[in-house]
Image (cartoon, rainbow, N blue to C red):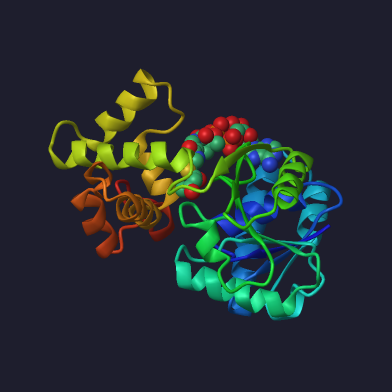
Length: 279
Ligand code: CAA
């Protein structure tokens, strides 16, 4: 099966790995510039090189995985794809335009899935001549077991079922959710990260204290501020804003500290600085 992954950023790279690690799957890793797609593949290569040097994977296995990921433009690589997983910028217009363009490129029968973390699947599919379904991976997408499978208003049951089957084929556990802002995980997780930022802003504890408290007191693998940096504070902010806009409920107000950090370009791991500093 050939999968077109649209967007070669953090999530796109992880999703490409999640498919390419499984025999029988090849991946077209696409971005709007050839160079960006190639950069995405280069980052994947770098990550695997680390695992080889630690003795976690053989070079042979890594070579096989890398050989099944081709970077490039969707116009050149997606015509024969069987499945598209869109992981482009988290913006409605960008996603709608991407699928409308793919509609003209992809063969009949190709399934359109979006990795959106909070936007409406129904709205993403507007003006697209085939159904769109949600296939929401979690970062790091090659390690995390869950896939939220989201049915939009117009998504046929058989498309939802097919995505669930594919999820199992690549070793994941699908959970079907109905369309709602933030679905299940982000509706719970991102307000928690947002609350941690309020706690920091109010001076209740410091960054390390908040993270240690949640790691040792709630057995979370990462503290909420560390996790916010890892997800990307821009993504966390965008999700809070969607939750607030869709519900009008003030409990979803974004923490001003996160908004300020995003405005200042302090997005977390990907920008080198967030709550923590990264090299
Ligand atoms: N093959 C073989 N070995 C591998 C491997 C692979 N493909 N990948 C990693 N390994 C190795 C690692 O080298 C590591 O070995 P060492 O311990 O000897 O160094 C070992 O396997 C464990 O690696 P992990 O990557 O699993 O590392 P970890 O146990 O420290 O876990 C983590 C890292 C999975 C990120 C964990 O900290 C975690 O679960 N954090 C929370 C993540 C989370 O909540 N994600 C959801 C974010 S929300 C989201 O994504 C949705 C959204 O829309 C915003």
